[in-house]
Length: 463
Ligand SMILES: [Zn+2]
Image (cartoon, rainbow, N blue to C red; front, side, top):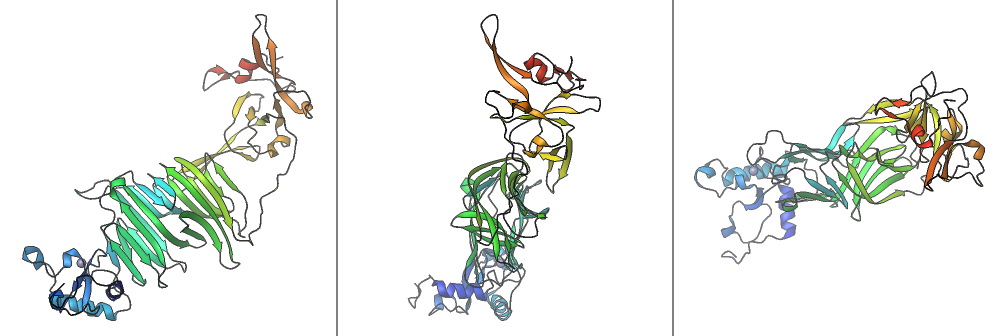
């Protein structure tokens, strides 16, 4: 209380008016720090009868005019601050506001929580066609007391305008918001409709930043937090269609957590399928959305697809429906083609066999003819199209009894009792590859015999 019984505390409504008047930062034009206190100008607090929003401005600790001594001499006097304040009040938007404080005290590897999802040691949190929308990098030559990590990011509003950006650990926000509140370690941004569009809190003791509110647009992509969950989606404003992946996961040590690309967009927004793969992370096909790309690990606790009602299911129907043995693995001959795909931050290798893409590189059973074709053993997980197309040799079966397709079985697992009474399991070829002989019995890489010789004991191709 001062002599007029005025408490120090300023009510929230007056504080908001002061923040809006000050355009959310220290009123000193070349400063604009968003870490500030409420500073009574003239009258000073001791002489004030009420908290007048026209006579109180925002000033950062450096530009607090009450400071005296050598430090204070660098500061501005109250009349100078009044001049800055009046100019800011008159202007539509003031100079950008800044916060250099937020990232201090954090160390690498940092943990970032966005909704329920956790990102640990991820180089690029959000990347769009090679452009880091949110990234952090190791500070190579940190000065004493400087943070070990360097953040950069660009955050847009629904109309595509900049909401704020982070340039090498400095928050820079333009000032056409309804409110921006920064306290030590927390940042909240409200849009012109007084809806909070961004909230982040740093927790230095856990070396963590928690983002609890997010609403970002990079046409046609939309990233938001809804009911505490991270949603990454594509939105088509023309026909009011939207599709989102809702993910509860931990991403660790990868190049990129959320990778969005306009290159793999189908023209129409529809559901073209969804896959979680060990190699390529989580993909929403045809909509340019990839999560957990570029190596690292991804532990998924839940994943949902949320689409507007007018989104059609356009998952391609399997071309061939063929009965397969219980085991389902099969043999295809041909030559694997490796394609190295260069992504902005990483490379991936694709394996193709006879014009069809494989999920994984299969084992080779060896070179089987003069033209250098291998016999590959493919897992049931590969596309069933390969089964009846070019190069198909036959199935592997555990058991031929009651098997509808036994004429298409190439190798069979049999059990025999040997002379010592031991149960021996053997893989036996049922048919020859007709005039195709194994050329190379030794695997050049391992200097060991190829698998069928070891396990089947006979080579149908040599005779
Ligand atoms: Zn200042």
